[in-house]
Length: 351
Image 1 (tube, rainbow, N blue to C red):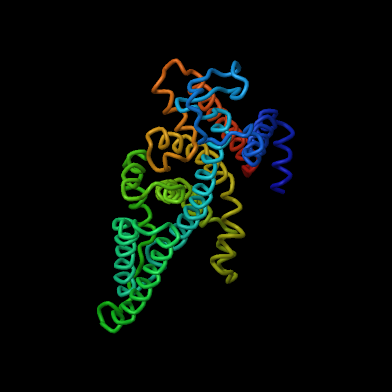
Image 2 (tube, rainbow, N blue to C red; image 1 turned 135 degrees about the horizontal axis):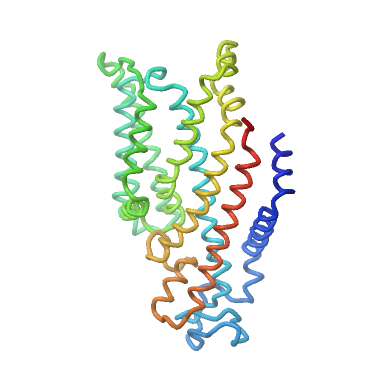
């Protein structure tokens, strides 16, 4: 039934078709970037051909930047970098935010219980992981990347084993062994309020100061801020549907909670979540370009649209360094938002 509504929306909206064709062509160009870049690597330097204007120089038909790097190759690889950051972040944010929002709305503040010993052990484990994994990440700076990764995995295994042993020891104390209600909904709301009270860019820049440059770390720090939107939507939809008669009937029939949430609640919350995914993805593309423009998050050798825009500051006459990446970014964001609007209209349940 969902597929039929999507098919009907696709047939009725020419903007949907245009946006879908554009994104499909862009996807093909990104996948075949090594073959379409005319033999130029995005970091290949040709200092004899700096600031070559487009359309007039045969080898670099979209021009070059301040270091003689080919603009066309950097557009292809820069768009690939943007999607390599934005898509994983939004997928993980959608899964994590939806799960947390639905769980908080369903269980509230009194249905879940935890032992105080488990809370103490988990808190100490999280602090140790943050301290040795991020704050004191320089302890492995003298090792190569593979050795540093293995060392971090080893530290994580040791800290996890220590936390498990500590939890067993703390459960022997009467005060810490007692079970208390877990205010899951209140914790989620307070966490979202704290994160939403700080501008996203400032929050990302603050987190970036604790992490070394790299695509994986950029994905992690953006995930810490982008799960809020899906969580808020999933919580609101779950609270609204929790009181409906067919949900109460499913509870009375003894269906497991996970089945009620996955079979009855989640499909009806698909429309706002799909819209949040598309608009979040478009926002992430812009935010990744902003971080690259500021030289934060990604290594300087990583091709990106923001790096191209930053190069235009050195020569205001190089209009092609602003026009081509900005036009590509705007068209991509507009196409994704058009797809999101079409999906929202197709998935909306008629009142």
